[in-house]
Amino acid sequence: MTKNLLIILTLLLIPITVSAHKDFWVSKRYGNVTSRIKTGYGYEEIRKVQIIGKLAEQLALKSDYTEPILLDFDHAYTGNSNSTYYLGVDDQEITYNHGANEQKILIKKKIVIYQIGSSFNIINTLKMLEYSIKNRTKIEVEQKPIKRWKRTINSIDKNKTIDILKSPETELINSIKNTKIYRPEKDFKSGFTYFWKNDRYNIVFVEESNEKTITTSTNIYDFEKRDNIVFVFKTPSKLIVHETSKKEIISKKYRIRNASKNYKPYKISKIGDNMYTISFSYYYRRRRKKQILIFDQTKGRLIRGRNKYL
Image 1 (spheres, rainbow, N blue to C red):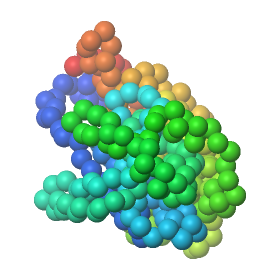
Image 2: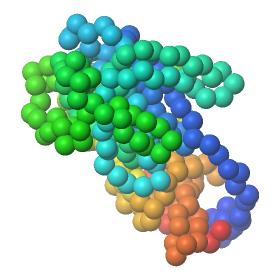
Image 3: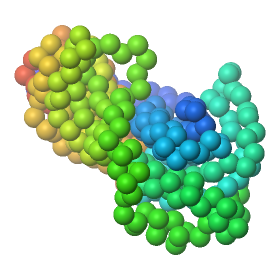
Image 4: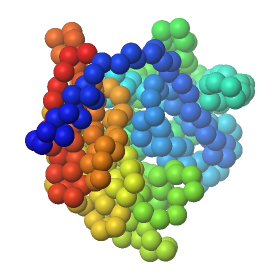
């Protein structure tokens, strides 16, 4: 490692004061479907939930179902956990985008699919929705109030939701799976992006309406664009880098140590010509440590940096 890089790493490892933050909501409406996520940071999961909302709208249309639907996602971002599902018909106030532009709307008697997890499975959510549309009256009879912290949720029995998840995919689900939904991006025209189709995320390069598939994945944890490159994390610890000018992958697949202990999106910063830092923090023996990596774009190489207690 060069002397200049050592100096940069030393400066980056200087402790800074971190202010407290609050979780927030992001809500979008697609026809009669409201897709809402509560999270703590700007995770890619926000965009994936919006993809689910668009697919749910298609399922409702094909089912001729026009009543309100709420897909309610509670992002358990501080750990790795499978989703727990609650399925009911409920009166519930919907809060749109906490903050200065906060709006609250009360929609009565709607299907509510509430799930808590560190990531959200698209096909499982569509299975829940299809069952709810077909069995709304039955759900209203069988559901019971369930306490979740400060919130009471109407839901059918947990064992029933497990049975729904185990059920085979129907013809309707298979037809919805064939729908191509692109990553929600404002004013996107060209470069790298991805779309979901057939339960896979397809990373593509788009230029003048032409589309080239670069790679596919069953999951995308984070998708960070910087200048002419894109950092793609398929999981919290698996990184691959793409370059716009070359329209291809420019790095080998890297596995980042300690990344599974990190619960915030990666902080990626440019520190010079073709050099970027990738930093995150995690707890080790009850103390917080900061880890910094350096990516050399010219060589397509990830340089392991230093760790320091904060």
